[in-house]
Image 1 (tube, protein in one colour):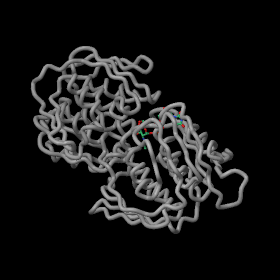
Image 2 (image 1 turned 180 degrees about the vertical axis):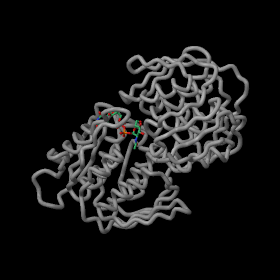
Image 3 (image 1 turned 120 degrees about the vertical axis):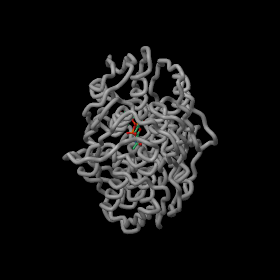
Image 4 (image 1 turned 90 degrees about the vertical axis):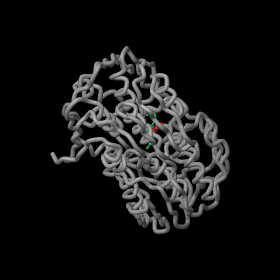
Length: 427
Ligand code: UD1
């Protein structure tokens, strides 16, 4: 087991570059299995969740080659001969369920392990399954697996386009249904669809493979199923949550930090909240965000997480760390996941003063955090603990950092390059 040892209080400055987006790369890898030929994905982040998704499609029979030097992943799906996403992998990474749409679309069947809850909530997949049913699939649950097939027809049958109304703009359900619709017969309309930039990236990828899609980035997406899809070469978009993490680190302990591959329009609500707090944050061009930390008076704020274009839930723990040292009372409301304040007790052990009341965090700004041994509860909460350690007085040890490895490429290397004192230790 590895942990981070952080000596807090160093000033951060310089340039740091953001990697490809985890939450796009995973979907593009899943979608690539629908092609009849090889796909090349560039700007693939070297993170554990990507390696897990590679394992998932290898289990299905795909041939995969990763060029780690160049962050390029090649996927040849022509040898796929299994339709099962096994429990070991789904349990490890919930996003493994995103191979269901592509498998069902291309092969008419999938056997999918039912994901359990996770550290941030119960996270059902009912909307994914309902969408498949609306398109003519039947779902049978047996022994912890869902057997999903195109209903009552011969092998090789395809899903049928349909109109699907989502109860909530779930990203995963929108993506799984978009992929399921890609080789379905006819037109599928998804109402109340998610609008995140990663959904647009997936739509662009599917379009380049041969699918016709209207309304990407809106809450009504129309997909016209294609007869076949071809492999393509595609660049994964930059990761806005990683970008937001570095922007927050710079806000907490920076002088002047330039975050490259940080797309302003994807981070707008986050950056506007930082401005409201009093942080000097701006963009030099559409792909670079600059934080000029100064002695500005910082003010408390109210924040509510919401699906895009609202404040992203994945940046909630990150901004709570910043608010923990902003004078006055801030309130952060979590609307997407029911259990996403688990890390707050750890932050309070570092001197923060945060009370949880239902899905609200009431944060009374403290003067200084002080280093302590803390745990990474999940991916983003883990990154938040690292930021707390950077801002704190003394030494912070963050354990269970395998959570952080799921979504940040060379986190400690990138932070060190802008002046953080962060090391790896065993134990
Ligand atoms: C994705 C992101 C995750 C982010 C989240 C919300 C990936 C790999 N992960 O997760 O980082 O935090 O979006 O922005 O892209 N729900 C149901 N039934 C369903 C589907 C969802 O009840 O069928 C609920 C979930 O339990 C959750 C909420 O809807 O409370 C949002 O889930 P969703 O948008 O689907 O998130 P994910 O795609 O799982």
